[in-house]
Image 1 (cartoon, rainbow, N blue to C red):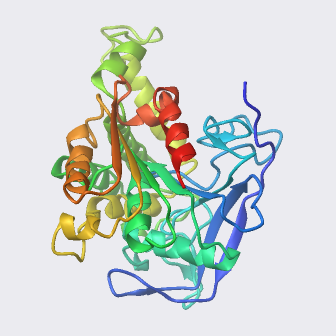
Image 2: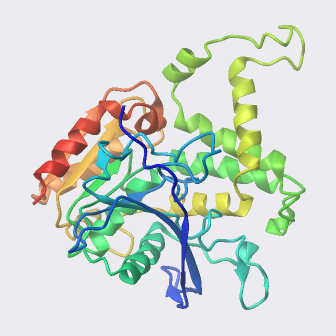
Image 3: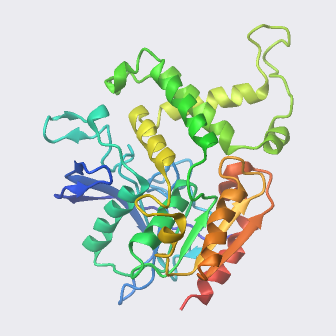
Length: 370
């Protein structure tokens, strides 16, 4: 078994700047939370950026304290001898703006008012997240990335890095991604929003942190979580089993899948801010790689580096056809692109549940980079 990166410390970079967002609004000053794993080489050329999904954070590997029950969210991938080998690479993961995990977001204090931004926080897009991350690399004196790799919203960030900074990014690896969010994905997020808006504790975003709209956020998370799974994975994990603690004819009795969704939603409330959940959902809904370009072709023509794409057979949130739409455009443009459809039963979460099915292809791809 490969070694862990051990105990890691989350760092915080503060920027006394005003970042112009795609909306035209300014956001600043900024704080970005980030973690690093491995050692930066002398010419700063061994850097890999890991980008996280919707409710992820900068803590991608190792543990922050010896008492932590779980390591970082992609610990299987990052460490000595692992896919992103920290004996070879300097791996960095940054929390996006709009989040509540250390980077500037709606729960942060607005320096102009001394109070939390709440809904006065500006709408951010994935492209804005990437521009904020670029400030961090400028601060660290890093001007070359071996690759940018991430799943779901992380895949969107990887592509945007390739489009915005073609002279800096040597490759991108988007996993379970899309070129533009589908109407169905937007519809699911709309249900999640309504669950929160309908909770009287939401108070139009002006809830007290100690009294969040817990019922609404738990239901919103449950809606999202269903989209991360698949029918097959639910059969495998739960089937039609009825909860042993309930009678089948108890009106409020639950199937195991119901109990799971309730538990997952309730635990989520304890670790994520409601307004951040809403702002990041909006960023997902707005994502379109051709934003501010005349077409997807014009946008992707800016992607100069090799790209390695993965989709999963049972993913119905960002279906393989959505990844393939982007890959076909890149092929038409004669860009260096590789694509693999991975057979997995675990839906959108496949990239987290079964990494062994695709990681050898990542190692091979990185080994071939010049």
